[in-house]
Image 1: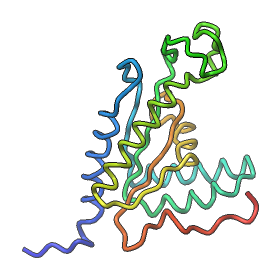
Image 2: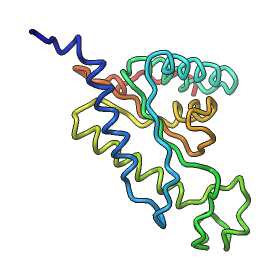
Image 3: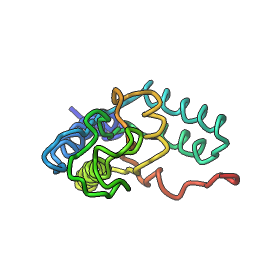
Amino acid sequence: MIYNERELRKQSVQAMAEAIMVAARTAPKAKGRDLVEVAMITDEHIEQLSQTMIQMSNESGMKFLLRDAANILQAEAVIIIGIKQEDSECGLNCGYCGYDRCDKKPDYTPCVMNGVDVGIAIGSACSKIADLRLDSRVLFSAGWAAKRLDILDGAGLVFAIPITAASKNPFFDRKSPVNR
């Protein structure tokens, strides 16, 4: 049997995405609370995410969303990482969110520790991506659209990481839109 890498690439990248999701899951979390949510989307869900980004660009006038919407279509998979919103107070009363005590923080203000947790999960995922020699880029824009689509069932602070295996990383050296 002869297996050509080009014919196996998509399924190989998607299989590696499972290990990337595990890496995000096992990242350390504040006070040991696991509020991180991780998912992988492929195929028609990537297209839906792209279409949502186009719609968001039309609504907001933010042209970088159009660039990123086209860009994610080059991914074999997109990893979505976010944080649960319920029980969003860490209880440290650290004041990093701008309020002296957790019980004074409005619900719409995220706990900084939750932001740190999602950032560490993203870093762990990106470390695994580097180990696997995949092409990627962390995108706020695609995460913002994934949040709108509620891919992570109510999670906030959502980011997306498109991944592929190409001869040149398609997620860098992109043409910037003229009007941001």
